[in-house]
Length: 268
Image (cartoon, rainbow, N blue to C red; front, top):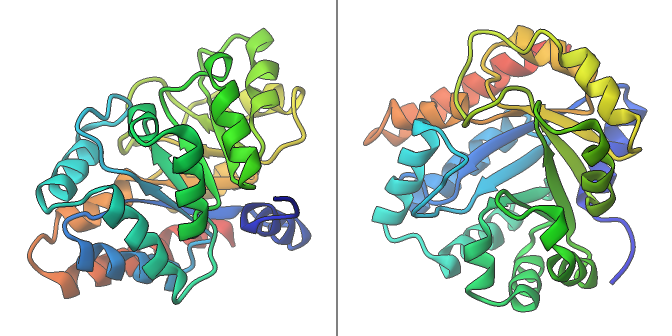
């Protein structure tokens, strides 16, 4: 398969508008399928430009407590591979927003790389970030994604040596994700002080779009990242809207809408 996909089109449109993408993370199936689907609709209607769906996993080693608990809630509600794909298909019934899976390699390997890529693409997924798969070990996966026109996303960390950034960038076809702080996911009070320098260093190695996340929780965070990057990723701050309103779907959806709307003011 060839041709542009939704991720490329979204970044092209944002560039033409001299803006950054607002990327929202939700864990698929948190706290249950129906609420999760409604949550996807709420954040998209509030202005999400790209939806990052976490695929619930029993050992989410890159995630902080907020996202660990979200995955636990999803798994306990019965979320499975089939239901994650069903969720994507349901989102596709009302939205064409790009969807990127945030997942772990065991979940892909269990189904076979080629089969997983095909199933994901047919459901409506546009790209996949496999957190624990380094590019040095990803040749087969990269080929499986290329065959389905699925974009690959790779992470650059503050500790990534400059000489390795080029290798990571060469494996990515969708965008690069710079995690602005070391450690696991979670809300932070402030961004890294050397963000601008790190982004400039990464851009020396790639022309791919660059998004920045980990710890974004305030409009001023969004503003500062949007000034230097092509996209802003918000995760734990969004997931906490669900965690803080369990059992009250209306309150959950209102909180999600308000959070995205508020944070997006940083793009103005």
